[in-house]
Length: 105
Image 1: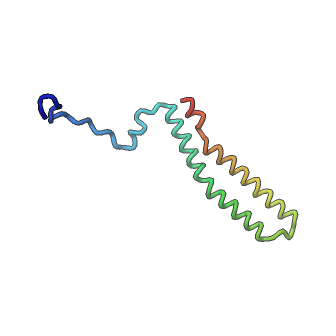
Image 2: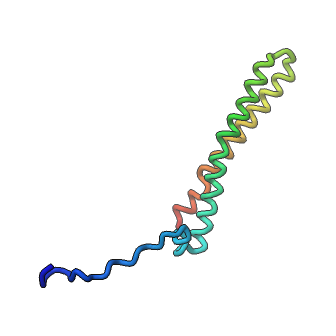
Image 3: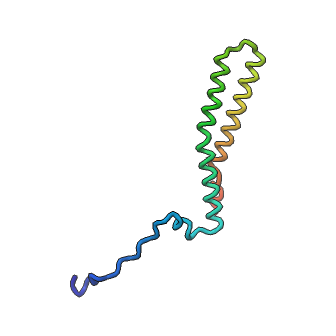
């Protein structure tokens, strides 16, 4: 270019690090803890769907056998309902794991 523009031999900015480790380069201990909590929460949240399908299959198997023995049938249905409740609570905890820490950081 001319006298007013930048010289054509201007150095380009150094390329950014492209390795996966560069994500963690500027992380302190709190950031690392939040990343670990996020990883655990994501794994727990991802595991909830297969577990829910397993519990649902047990419910269908219990319903398919029919209520021949009412006390045993009722016990199995109550057990499956309790398991679904525990799964919902665990899913809620895993989905929001680390949420308060993100707001204060």
